[in-house]
Length: 554
Image 1 (cartoon, one colour):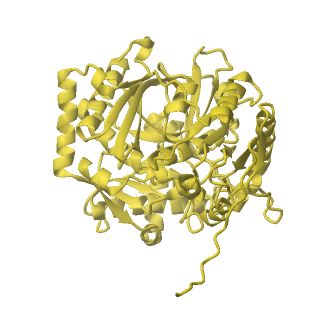
Image 2 (cartoon, one colour):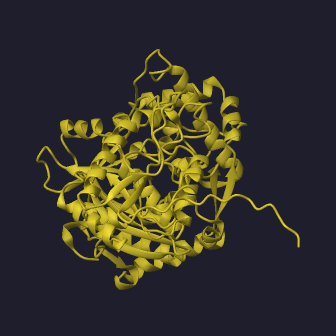
């Protein structure tokens, strides 16, 4: 009988009955993990106390790393090593006080058999809720069962009671009665007809989505599988960031300087300094303007109807951040870019819809929104934002709960109070961007918006839509919110109609939320229903969330 040398297989020790394991996922960048560790440590201490109060013990599944000065899982490689030592049947909490790269631990969560709970703090400065929403969207796409919980105070009954329920039963559900399937909603015939016609046009004539390297920041939920995307009529052109870098370096100083001059003539302000490591410099701005020209030309070369630049990874060590590029692309009024021979103005008089962080769900949404709003005669500029944080208005201007929609790139000046004249550019934080680069910063104007999110669940494309209003807050309150988050980034003060904070967190399957303005409340309602009809005709499962303005049901 032949004998074989069998491989050694790790057999993790079983946890005790009243023990719960904890993993903490982090960033790929050492500087970010080190700076954010103190917030994570404090959160874990509060969570340990909350777990102990229920009679359980929270046990960290991986150690603090003295050499690196943090205790995060910081790569997929490390994540696999950690999960090889985890009891696959144990209760497991993923605790997040910061942004995290979901792919670092997605493999382990997919294979885990025990109950999983994702937990986030509620802080603008330390965006655990943003990281958790991304992880939740990734787990949803991967068909992994999980529960989720969030809060400012882990000792408060609002957090402690559901935590105790999860520890006892291994599952937790939140009310989502604000969600209504589209087939239960009356859509006017003309509106439905327009949505279906736009869907048919897209499926018949097709469109190209330019993707500058997939998988930015570990966002598994942001990758739309080709077999789900193709039935919508949209096909990916997989582009390389090396090509964008090359084209950027081929662009002349004169062309780049003309882009900046165009912006400054319209009132754009650049907050510059001389120190490359800390300030936004003229050299960084010139490279950003070159990248803008390069992106438009490459998009034209390949016939792209929408593009996404990877943003934080890949190019960050070679070029300044792409924020200024992204927001400019999303604006109809923007610096003209000619073909290389100078004969044609590319995408003249229209935006080139850009999806930040290569979020392909947002890219499909951006293309749909642009075409729909153009057909409706509504503002065509649209963007994603992070669902960054929210708080009650400290100024007393409104009694409503006001979300902070905040994104580093892609926000167009058309969304800002004052347009280009209300826009400024400040240096991106150095811990993320060693090569610098400025943002496209502004305060979103008051008005009526449609919000939406495309996501993948049960092997299908789905879309949630809702209505919201952007409110104007006093400058002091805006500054408070900026200082509580990231003051270099564009901000939107949003009130979601008929959707509370906790309802949004319970349902939303992404850290991103897509927004577009309409000329008024009635027009926004119409755009919402037309977009829902278009999405349904493209094969998506569609749901409307919340109410219209004033609490009127759909």
